[in-house]
Image (cartoon, rainbow over all chains, first blue to last red; front, side, top):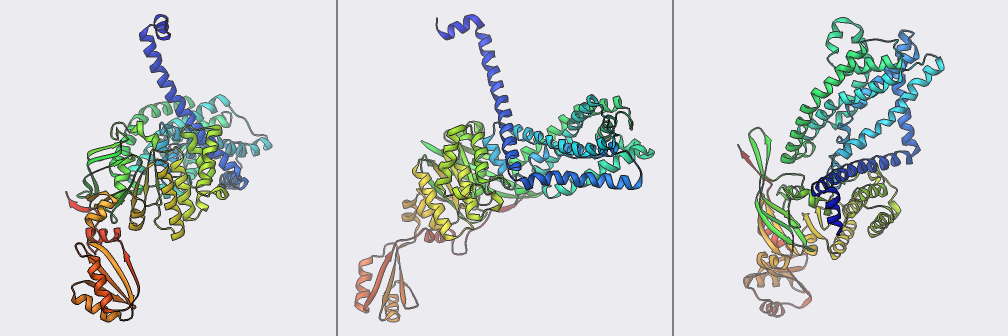
Length: 286
Length: 320
C-alpha cells in the first residue's frame, strides 16, 4: 500500500487535509516565534557585548528610582517598600504604554522596519521581540526592592503581583497600538518618545497616586487603566498595606478595558497601515 | 523570462486636503532576468516611488506590476523573500548594532543558520572588504562603509532581484567606483538589478537597459546602445590641439560645424548625419595638428537632449 493510501485509510482524507492545514498554522506560528526569538536574542547579545551600554541601563533605572525615592523621603517618611512599589508601578506602566509602539518608533527612518517587512513572515515577531525586552524590568524590580529588603519592610503578594503585571501590559496594549498607528500614518512622534516617556513616568509615579488619594480627582483618574494597574501593583507589592481601589474591581476593570479597547485600536492601526501603504510612512512623506 | 514587468503603473500622493502629486502616470517597462536596468530621471521624477511600489511598501493606485512572474499586489508574500533593497538614503540596518550582528540577524530571519550562515556572512564581508570593520556599529561608520554594509545586508538572502536606490549618491569618487565594481560583480553572478540613479556615467557603464523618467512618465526605454543611438543628438565629439586654434575654429564655423574653442583646444560636435572624414580633411588643410581625439556620445548628451538643458522636473502638483 502506498504511503498516501495508508494515510488515507488510517486517518481518512478529511483528517489528512485538516492535518496539513494544521501543520501550516503550526509552521506559521513556529516561524513567528522563532523570528521574534532571533531578533530578541541578537539585540540582547549586542546590548551585553558592551559593558558600558549594559551598565547604562542599570544606571538609568537607578536614577529613575532616586527621582522617586529622594523627594518622597524628604517630604514624608514612607516605608521603602511603598516607594519601591511606586517606582516599579511607574516603570511598568511607562514600559507597557510603549510595548508595541517601540517596535516601530525609530525603525522607519533608517529603513530597518521595511527590511524587517521583507524578511519576516509576520510583523508580529517584531512586536513579540520588543515585548520580551520587558524582562529588563527585573532590574527595576531589584533596584526598587533591595532597599526595602534591607530596611525590612519588604512584603509581596506574588500571585496578585503576577496578575497585576499581566493586566498592566494587556490594558496598555491598545494605547500602544494607537501610538504606533499615529506614528506610521499621521505624525512621526519618534522625536517626542523620550520626553513623553519621562512625563508619563512622573505622572504614574506621583500624579496618579496623588489623584487616587484626593477626591474630586479620584473619580476622574479612575477612568484610566493606569490608575487601576498602579493601585494593584501597590496593593500587591506592599502585601495589602496600601489599598487605593478595590483590587477585585480594578482587576475586572482592566480586563474589561482590554477586551473593549483592543479591537477598535487594532482597527485604527490597520487603517493607519493602509494609509502608510497608500501615501508612504508619515516620517518619509515629502 | 522577465524579472520585472510593469504596466501602466499610476501613483498619486495626497499632500494636503486639496492638493495631489501625480508621482507616476502610467509607466510601462520590463526587464529580462539577469540584466541591469538603469532607471534615470531628475529629482522627483518618480524613481523612488517606483522602487517602493515594486518592493511592496506602497500600493499603486492603478496598473499592474509583476516580479519574477508574481503579481505584487496579490502575491507579494511569495516573492518578498527573493528580492531585496538598498539605498544610500536609508541603511535598512539596525543603527546601534554591529555590521556582523546585523548580517547574522537578517541571515537568520531569511532562514540561514549554522555554518551556511557563517560562510555567507564571511563571503559578503570579504566581497565588500568589510572584514576589519565587522565589529563596528552602523552609526560609527563612514558613508562609504554604510553603503557597503547596506549592500551586504541586501545580498544576504541571495536575492534574484536587487533594487538599488542611488547607491553612489553622496559618496566620494573612489568609493563610488568601488561600489560600481561590486554592482558589476553582483550582476555577473546572475542577480537582476534595478538601478535608480542620477549618475549618467554610472548608468551608461553598468546598465544593459535604460529607462528615462520625467514627471512620472517614461520618456525613453530600451537597450543602452539603442538609446544612445536613437536619442543622442551627436554622432561624435572631436577634440583638437593645434598651432592655430582660433583660425581653425573660425574656418570650421564657416564650414557649418558646431565649434567651441577653449584654452587652446578646439571641440567640434558632430551632429547625426555629419561625416568624420570631411572634417578631418578640413582640419588637416587649416592647421598643424598636435593632438586629436574622437569621443563617442555619452548618456549625458542623451539626458540633456531628452530633458532640455534646464534640467528635469519633479512630480506635477494637481488640484483636486
